[in-house]
Length: 176
Ligand SMILES: CC(C)(COP(=O)(O)OP(=O)(O)OC[C@H]1O[C@@H](n2cnc3c(N)ncnc32)[C@H](O)[C@@H]1OP(=O)(O)O)[C@@H](O)C(=O)NCCC(=O)NCCS
Image 1: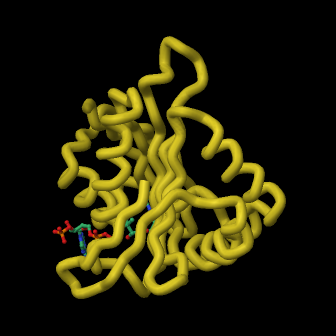
Image 2 (image 1 turned 180 degrees about the vertical axis):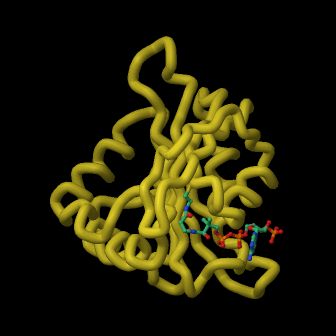
């Protein structure tokens, strides 16, 4: 999967799968993005170290129903999207989605471009259901997911503990 796009915002974006050689800059990306938002589960001090990140990339590259996308402007990583398909046969058509874009780049259409690429890839790789969880007050992400047809299937009460207190978490899914 490789895509060059010029977004409506004028941004030139390159979307491709992560390589093992990206591990270091992905580590730096996660350190930054996790310090910019509380809507990702991972805290900065919990970000994978570089060898573990390298191992993650290998796992994604070697499993037929897993996808690890990076979005680059020039050669800087500005966003990532992971689709983690299940291993067991009865649920291997189901994949969990996670997405993150650096704060300076929010609102430029990068999240949308990543979602579009991932959904197109999923259709061609036997994935029939994409699911995710999102904090109930994360309006930007919820809007993005709804734009691509995701629907709320359930609410997990007090499932996230943020600095402002407990938040409910929506379970959302898209049937392809
Ligand atoms: C959620 C996230 C991935 C969106 O990425 P993005 O690059 O800003 O997304 P886009 O620019 O493609 O915008 C997507 C949609 O968000 C909505 N949106 C944009 N700005 C918004 C705002 N200020 N408030 C609410 N919704 C907004 C719009 O519906 C927009 O689509 P449209 O412009 O076609 O109408 C990004 O904000 C992010 O990484 N946030 C922190 C991490 C996170 O929350 N990840 C998801 C965890 S479940």
